Image (cartoon, rainbow over all chains, first blue to last red; front, side, top):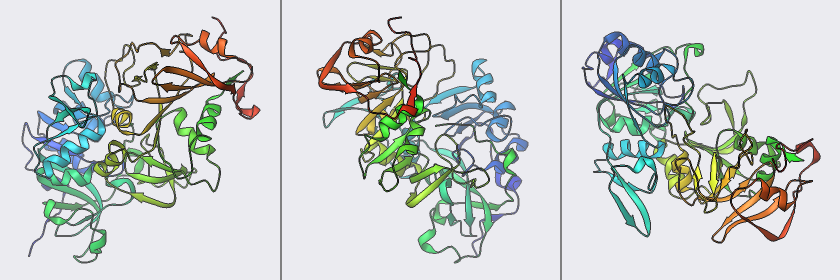
Length: 233
Length: 233
C-alpha cells in the first residue's frame, strides 16, 4: 500500500543536504510551510539556495533560515519589503546572493521546469536592467527575452487537505506558487492542515495530483501571531 | 485646489467601464475599488490568485487564507475564483487584464514607466510590477504630480531605471488627467481652481491641451483646501 505520509516535519526535511536548491511555496501566510521551515532550521543544512516570492520576515521561517546563515542564495521577486530585515542585513554585508526575478517570470520558470520545457521567451523585462545577459529576440514584432527553467532538489509547500497518495487540496489563496512548485523538484513535501482518507477529496477538488508529491505531513497550524506576512508584491 | 489621494482614486474609478478586469497596485490604486458604484460589474484581480476580490475584510472577520497582493485581508464578491500563480500571470502577461492601476516614481512623455527602483535603494525588489507594465492592455498611473520636494515626475525622459518602456496610457495626479499619445502628452482635465498653464508649470515634459480640456468633475470632499504644491515654485 502506498503511503506518503510522514509523522513529523523532522523526518520530512531529514534528507536535505548542504548546497541544496529548495522551492519554498506560499505568498504571505497562505501556502507557506512554516513548520517544515522551522524543522529545516533545526536540521542544519547550509549553503542553501532558496526560491520564494519574498525574503521572509523577522527571524521566523525563511527569515530565520537566512538569519542563521544557512542561505547562500535567494531567488525572489520581492525581497525589499521593510519586514525582510534578516535578508537585507545579510545582503548588504555581502553574505547572501540575490537573483531578482519578476514575479510572473519566477512562476513560469518553475512551471517550465515541472513541464519539461527548456525555457521560454517573455516580453517581461525586455529593455530593462533585468534583461542584462539574457538572449533577446523579436517575436511577432515584440522584443522578448529568454528565461530558463528553474529546477530544484526539494519543494516545500503547504496545502489544506491531503491524503496518503499525495493528492492535495488548497483553500482560497493558498495555491499561488505551490501548484507549479510541486511539479518542479526531485522531492516534494507538503505540510497539510488535515490528513484525510483516500477518496474523501473529490477528484474535482484535487488541485495537485499525488503524482507530483512525495511526502505529506499533517501539522497543527502555527498560531497566526507567529506567521510572517510581510513580503509585499 | 488639488485632489486628495481618495480623489485621485475616485477619478480613476469613474473611467473603469462595466465588465472590465482590473489589477490594482499598492497605495492610491488600492483605494480605487472603494469608488465603484454598487451594481457596476468591475472585476478586481490580485496576482496571488484571486479574481473577483471584494473590499478589505472588517476587523474580526479576516480569513487567514484570503489576502491580497499587499498582504491585506480581503473579501470576495459573488462569482470570484481562485487559481495558481502561472494562471494568474497568464491573465496579466497574456493581455486578459484590461487595466492595471499602478503607482509611479516617474513617467515619460512616451509612456515609459519607472516605479520599481527608488534612488538610493540598496535592496532591489520588482514583484509583479514588470509583468503588469508589460502585459496589461491599459496601464493607468496614479501619483502625486510632483515629488515631496516639488520636483516634476512627468518628464521628457525618465531618470530612474525603467519598469517597462512605452506602457502608460493615462496619468491621474492630484492636479490633472493626462493622456499619453503617439504625439506626446495631452492634458484632458485639471483640478478645480487650476488651469493648463499652472499644470504645465509643474510638468517637465511639454503638454498639449486637448480641445475639450476641462476642470475635473469631483465632489468637493475629494479636494484639498489648498494646492498640494506651491504654484510656480
